[in-house]
Length: 497
Image (cartoon, rainbow, N blue to C red):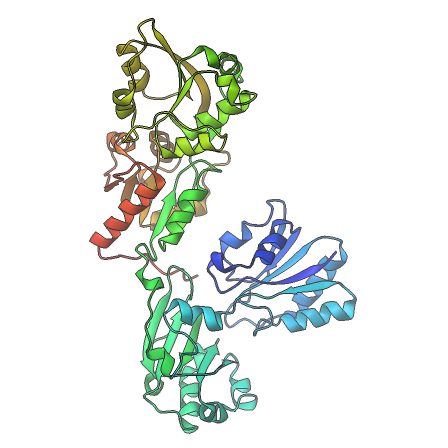
């Protein structure tokens, strides 16, 4: 097998390369650094061994031990991914690890990553080169004081011009500034320091070379010295939920879409599922029976994507529906139908049972039949409303909501207590959260996908701050963005260990 020296990128999981994601997906062993994001580690199979070889600040680094670990793991016949921040060959000691593998006769592959030397400034709104300001840039480490004086000619760098990017140099920033000014750099030269670059809790400090030693800058930070640092192309800082920590309570396998939309808005979203989707109590006997009779109904009505995904696989194909029409309570349910190449004949204007009843056509004079596959526990507004309109309604259990096992970890609940907001997408998520986490772990801002969920939350004693106008994932995120704007974009704490 092969040991893969993989660049994890600067921190934003979205900057991981396709090749890196492919290798993580089939890794048997992941040897990772201290600052590797949890999202990247989750790309590896659950069965993969995860080995933290993180190097704590101020602690001597046993690189030899890491090298021996890689050689041993590589000889074991397993797929080994050595996941390194940024690019493994840019101050990542990847060359030393490759040499150790080379000398041991262990096959290896290098997968470059995006270096923080370029990405962190870009996320802070500063290009390292810019016409009229800088036509070159130099990347240098400022980690070891001895190397600062013995291996780096700072005066020569100062005279060379262009942009200077310093990695791991926060502790020695005053000395670096002094050396560069001694080489002729103007004390008024703009300087940018980016901490936690490319992450939602990114912090930016702007100063000058003359003041660099006096301003507070905390590691880990990338420092950019040069005229380009006066630019402020702040595309990332304008993300509406930047730095917000948001809890997502949807069932496993269903949280990804909401987590992704929140991340696009700049939030740190954490999936803490409190419900699970389980099969019907009778093992699906009744559901299969009614699926076999689907053509005998005038309408089949779906109130969730879960019901769609439980019911439609029981059909041979769409012809089993015969002349029956199909209704979906909202766009997410309609999209689930489209995955099976079925287009909903009816989707109400607002995505609640009351509007679906109001939008439903009257039954034929000879009487009409409606099949309603749904959750074991659900509101009776829809079947009762259709029956009042003259329809015969058959309700069949398509699935049940249970509690995931294991439930939220102590770390999950501790994270939730520090979060800014929590999202609920169904009454079952409200009840599930309060059952497994309780009010004491509930973040201060409660956001609900629609009025039914909000009513459940309120009935359980929660103060609901946000209700989506459009009862969809997109609408929920948009409502959170509006609330963040109203509150002035308040951010959560930084992720200091």
